[in-house]
Length: 221
Image 1 (cartoon, rainbow, N blue to C red):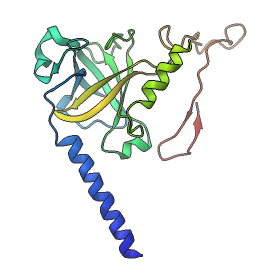
Image 2 (image 1 turned 90 degrees about the vertical axis):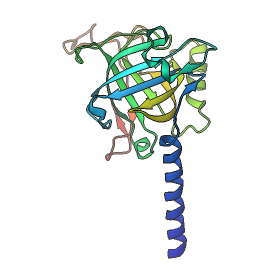
Image 3 (image 1 turned 45 degrees about the vertical axis):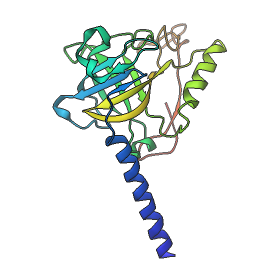
Image 4 (image 1 turned 90 degrees about the horizontal axis):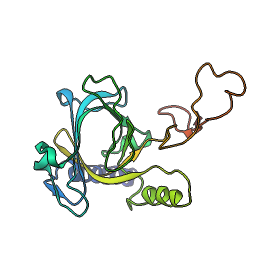
């Protein structure tokens, strides 16, 4: 029994190394998808929180065109070139070598949020880079959100892209809108801290069931 457990652990370790090699050992020079390039200040590793400062560029020549990493310094092909604050996202997914990220587009002062349009999506400043760690077909989330929008509801818009972080190719990702109250996202009336009586108390509420890292398996917010 002990031998079986040992072989099982060894196999898992080998698979982990193979995945790591696949993610970090491959270089990326060009793609038919937009290429998103992130460089953190001082090449710092991206933490769970808080967000750290970084620069992001999105190379996108347009539909049907080939994109090249070498175009990252050519303003003609940059969909975005500016500052962001970035952190890891998720709970169980953080155990994977392929991380999920949350980031905020910011002005040059690294403090003021910068509402911008990324890859044709409406202007905002809160975004998600989903690694689709548990979606091995790479289509489930994209398809479900798209179908939900076609039914007349709001679903997070998304675009596939290749991601490079600090000169390391991380793989295929989905750039998504973060769910939040906004005219172009979840269109509900925002409630302020002083809205404590009717009729102001009625209106925009967003709730979610979430997993807390290292805590209860389910937490309502």
